[in-house]
Amino acid sequence: MGTVVDAANKEANGSVAEKKPTVIFVLGGPGSGKGTQCANIVQHFGYTHLSAGDLLRAEIKSGSENGTMIQNMIKEGKIVPSEVTIQLLQKAIQENGNDKFLIDGFPRNEENRAAFEEVTKIEPEFVLFFDCSEEEMERRLLGRNQGREDDNIETIRKRFKVFLESSLPVVQYYESKGKVRKIDAAKPVEEVFEAVKAVFNTKDEKRRGMLWEYSNS
Image (cartoon, rainbow, N blue to C red; front, top):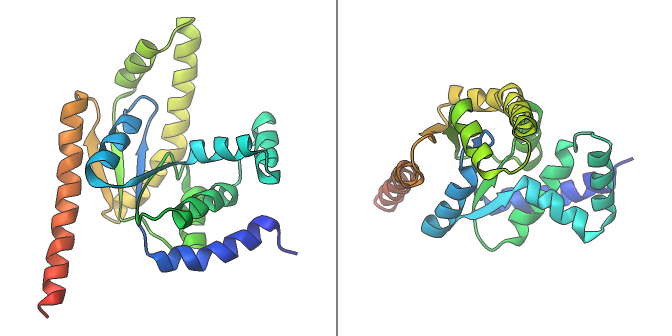
């Protein structure tokens, strides 16, 4: 027997694939500054920013059956199944009038990645990877955190380790397909955004060129 999630997925799949949205995965370790850069991309290039974490938190807050299940799993220290996060992402893409999306903080691992492509039939246009050293991320996070420094360092290092073990294989997979746009995130915010703009401007120029060729063929 199929679950409610399965039924919702089946219903959403066709409509999301038919929409043919442009999807860009945004990945980077904790403190790499991807949140700031996502806000800049939204403002300058008209994308909709979807954060997997925010969608899960909003679902919990809604008090829905799904939200209660997510909350219980997090309380028990379990990982929320890929299907649940993907369902929320699909719903957000489908209900939004835009057709250009930045998906931030997802896929977190290879299983997430494979499930997203399998369920939605969507491959990302590219992966925007904010590359930053552990030392620099640590410095930034400690700079904005208050409290016991050793606790903070320990937590930060754990998060960084999880990122290296889980998310880096996703970056490597897309790198093998020529789909990774690596940004040096250790630079000042303004310089980082100049590099980001160059990536998006190149993408738009390519698209305009393809449309021109198509209209003249």
